[in-house]
Image 1 (cartoon, rainbow, N blue to C red):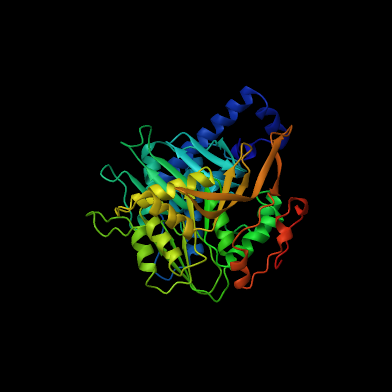
Image 2 (tube, rainbow, N blue to C red):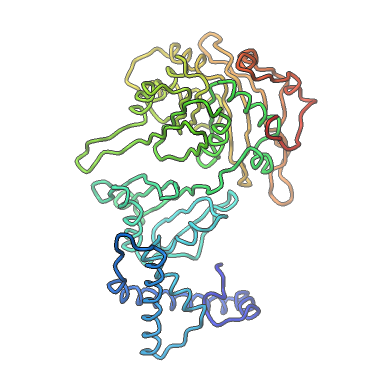
Length: 465
């Protein structure tokens, strides 16, 4: 339930009392509906009266003039209709109209809410969010399908994208980098759908993930050595498991003196190093021409003298080019893949290599995979919504026709507590990675004691260890 006081002349105690019974909830819902109707009425009147923005205008001053115009219209309607509106009501109407004019309508406050990680619009009357890994429905609503389509147009028009019956789905991103997927009828049967994966303003650090229980101090230290020691790392996980967040953290370990090429469908990797080139794929234009795929960008990146190549996610034939790059002097490259286990991630890579159009025997593909990738980091979204690195596995080679894996670290789940939270801890398996000499050759000295189960540490990872 949203803030009750924003919807009428209720004191805090009265609001609480009303909100605790059905009659009170009905009163609040009716009040909200009345204010939404008034907001729409004000919007219809004020839309043609907004002062035009001119080149060189101060944007905040222009917004202030618009707010003043909205207040004038509100006061005029109140006087003509002899309605009573509290200060909170006026403020809400003003904010609603401003959001319609300049922002993203009913989902604006959700996008501004730092506790929300994802916004999902399932038609005009059902808007859901993800908070702390849990999905919940909100009270926010659009008026109708046309209203949703208006906001969709607000999102994609500045990017030169379009969505209509002939092209009913599109990927885009907001100015802050948040990833947006839109799909409309006839593909979306119950109305236009918007899914927004929010872009963190303050990217998570390894320390943050340790405090969340996503990984242990030992795992963080080991992965730092692996990235700096130029091992090729594949991050594997399901949808919403935190692959991109983990990729961001791993990318942050790359030294500042290396040239990094990032390749993504929508730029999400946030690197602070000085020598970074960010590449983004492009869909076909309205004539069906000009499409640039991830694979095109991977092939082109090899001509850009990269020290490291980071592919946000491999989904198709680019897997072959990525593996070949890893095998031909671009050690230390990183990518992600959708898969539920480290073994499944290798099977998916094999399937995607087959999608490249180049016919290779299965054994040749598996040999490419086993020689190219050193480490698979599996991350999962648990039942309680938390994210955990469930396995850190090394690819050690081939046995017959099979790529062999050995787990270095695992998450040992011990059960669910009384609050529904997953209990468990990360543990070393006792296996020492075979690529430690390679890390040492790159100046990364890793103590073998790190991999002894008895030496497992749960204390915070300290930067520079």
